Image (cartoon, rainbow, N blue to C red; front, side, top):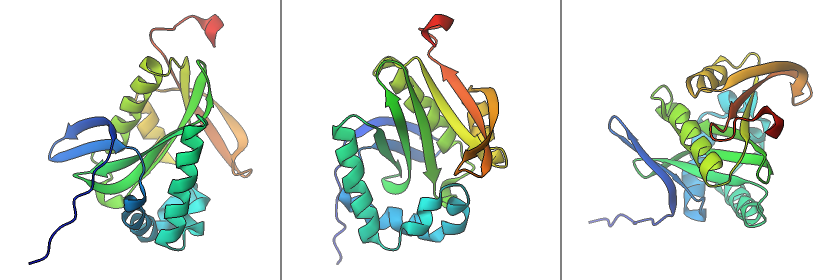
Length: 192
């Protein structure tokens, strides 16, 4: 009889979508193997928008990344959370380029096994609520390549507004759409 290992984690945000129990949890070393395999399985689709996917060559690379982001979080440069679906590491979501009491940018990726269920949209919405209520941010930006229709739809479904398009904003080559969600409790335009 095999004994299944129990993993413990600190979950910042939890919610359910249909039969999926979603937790946005602090990244931990035990998640590295599952996250690496999710990246490896979807490397071409993730790498199209997030070139770092090609740099992840093994679970050790993912573990090193988790260690680095833990340090960045301690230094308040970013917040990175693992998206757990029914306890399984399935992707990540983050707030980066944080400016205290002002702004942040949101980024994410999710295993193709779980895409199309509203998990990313709800995760983005929940993380924005955290950013507004706990971090007192004035706004959160979501930047997506013009050709990335999936991320554009996530932004629209999460009530972000298109602010404009900048040439060569993504990796110095792709035009980027800048979507913004404004903290509803801080609606003064002078704050922005």
